[in-house]
Length: 380
Image 1 (cartoon, rainbow, N blue to C red):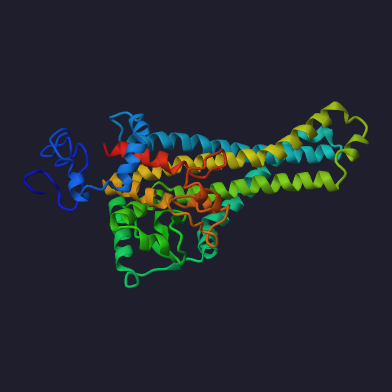
Image 2: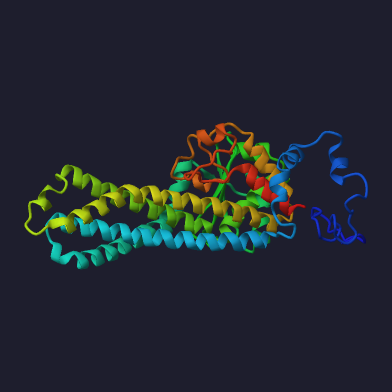
């Protein structure tokens, strides 16, 4: 540490020794902006983003820290996971109950509901077991990623090593996707089995500080166990969609409720059960996907905040996101709708066409401009 309080190799951060507003650092109004001296007279793309997003940045409290963002997103994620677990049990319970009613067994509806609930949990456990042990390997195969050693790309490997030391986690395996589109993702079931994968385009087009920000974002996903939750969430959504589809097909090809209606004593109760089951079978996949995407958006904010904790340089990741937003190339061969939520920005064609600003209930990522605004708020 030099006499001014700066730490060699660590960027100036507001409120830290040597940073603006910190001991030994420049104060607002002291004169020329230090960043302007580095950049010359031409504003950088991040400066232009800062001006454009001034209102969004000012909306965050002046005292906000990355820990505030982490706490907020963890609370929201807990609620979302609980809702998804309840939905899995409810879907299986209603479908089994409706199936029993379809056969005319109205006297056994309560046991049928309990059986469906237990069956749903067992199937979910089996699916989760597969995801736990084989999910990440399947994703890497689908993306066409190949493992990278230190001798293959020393800089990339060293950046990953730096960030994993800062995060306090074991060294993850490093993979490279041979694609000119810029993107990255993390996967694995826990930090001991973590994986960080980046595309060739991202590796070649970002500066070291920007690359460090992206890697720190993915390391935060590993550190926060987002990689585990991502795999399990995808499995549960898949189970709900599959069960709903099987039930609807059974009704369609099995003649609907005709068999049940021909039974004596069916009455209005059976009709109500069928209506509930059909409505749930139609809406459950929709709601499950909405929950999954809401979870994914919250976790992206959390990982951005975690990256700031690791790098102490919000502008590195903000600049990287700004660069990624201008990349129009979709990741066609390495990504699909089932894996898009895992990447640092949505890799699909529609999202790339809108520069990461497309947003809806089914969006896997928040708008890039909002993520940059949160990062710039941390850099104030």
